[in-house]
Image (cartoon, rainbow, N blue to C red):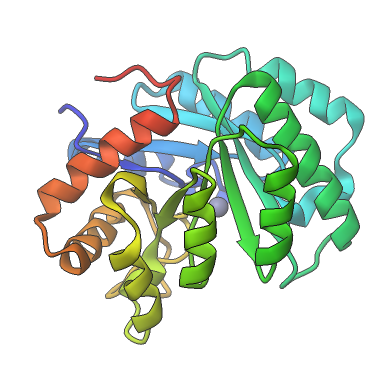
Length: 258
Ligand SMILES: [Zn+2]
């Protein structure tokens, strides 16, 4: 089946899928769902790349999450540069700032985020950015490396933050939280983001949309998130498939258009 929709951010390389990874991929493929698989550490970046190389409709992003910023070495950055030679590596991610969990010191997170933004600019690859409780610093660091294209993944922030990202040419990607019962403010952001700047994702194995909240998530459920977007945009789900597909291809332009 040809592709109809991209899950623009899912971690199918995660240990949660060790028992049935292939079946999870095939379930998504059978419904025309392609996968963008970001790493969050060196090891999971390598696994993302390996998975993408073995699966037609999967592509990898490589990078280190702010949680693991404390462990990043100069050699790791050199390794990421080398891995980016793979044609299945289409972006740098997920990278960013997380001041909620603070698993790495804030200054170290900023330094590693900046270095990976610079790497993305050097390689002319887009970035997938994670930002939690760190909106002003995220924008400030993006401004330090102008010219980098990217997406703010699993957006759960304020409308003002979305507007700031859009003003910088960024895309905004929505995951399961837009389907949660009390997420009225977040759904208002979905309505406000223009159709040509909006992506959908699952962030699987996390953040299953309603009515599966709390269960392990999987890429196929990106369809549910597209349905919620359609309701907010007063358009058909098919239309959401179509505009998010072209947005994904436009941003991750190393992917061959099919
Ligand atoms: Zn993620």
